[in-house]
Length: 258
Ligand SMILES: [Zn+2]
Ligand SMILES: [Zn+2]
Image 1 (tube, rainbow, N blue to C red):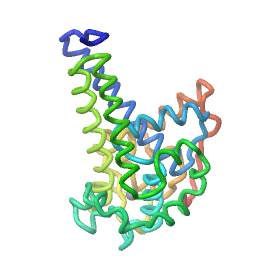
Image 2 (cartoon, protein in one colour; image 1 turned 120 degrees about the vertical axis):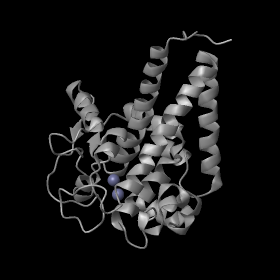
Image 3 (tube, helix red, strand yellow; image 1 turned 90 degrees about the horizontal axis):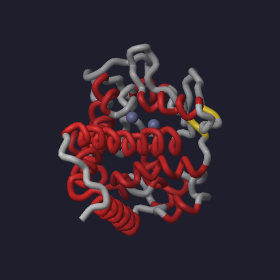
Image 4 (cartoon, rainbow, N blue to C red; image 1 turned 45 degrees about the vertical axis):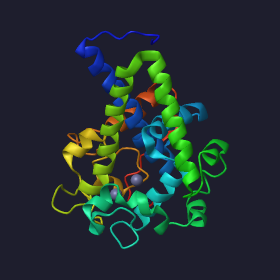
């Protein structure tokens, strides 16, 4: 018996799907990526935790391990040590790399990539190594979250949430595969790697598909640069700034590292 009885109105399900899609999607694009990995925006601690939690609950695992792998991707883009370049195979790029993650970074390398995050007790608690403990911990919290959803809204709410999280997961992996496959998109900037802008990944992944722009200036908060490059994540940052919740947004136009 759930606390809230959602009606069988299709639009209420569509609304809930979009709500979950945006919360969990922003958790990855704004939380794990632009905030933790690249420091493109400064937010209060409580809001940082709330946003990153959306990514964690959509099976992204330890933020420290995620950020370490992502920083390595930027340092070794499309080279032999890039953990998920499609040059090593499309299935590998989509999710195969996750099963061989320790091949790319030792636990010591993870810590040295993320010295800034290792000070934080919450990120530390969620895991600082490739050990299976951090995976099990993530599994525990993701299951607990769905049990709470079940209590609040019943099985339908859980199914809608899982559908939204599956879509979020696929769109995130599409950035690794599609936006690094030569010939599928276009470049605004002459990066030495294969990164490109792909409009439909840009839409699905809330602005992350403008990936050539991102590889040119990784720290820049805004990924969609041209007027038609819609960047939902950047719009969210602007709204946070407008209501006084973002202390700073990094807007350089120069080629930068992390
Ligand atoms: Zn990339
Ligand atoms: Zn990045």
